[in-house]
Amino acid sequence: MSQQPISDEVAYRIALAARVLPRISARDVIEALQECIGEVIDETTLSRITVTNLKTAFGQTYSLDGEDDGEGSVGPKRCYEDIMGGNG
Image 1: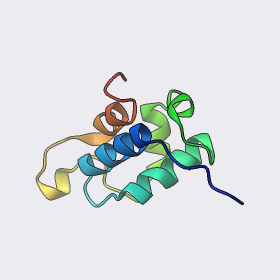
Image 2 (image 1 turned 120 degrees about the horizontal axis):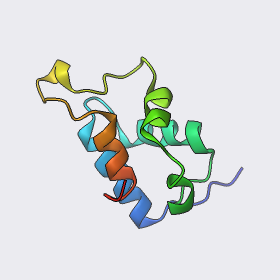
Image 3 (image 1 turned 90 degrees about the vertical axis):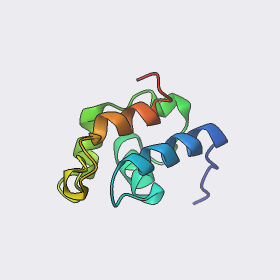
């Protein structure tokens, strides 16, 4: 199966989202997004993501609030905002 390349804009959003969550890599974000919206990740499919989708996709595997690292509460809402390009 051939993977469709991710646009620079979408890759940037994913990288920003990964930065705000402790111990979360860009690969983790991509896997969570694929769980929510399928294999194709583009600006159109990202527009269907919700904060609840991200919480569900990450499940209990990850600490989404950053409290364990003393980084304050950045949570999935910030991750969502970055994925939506700041327009979420």
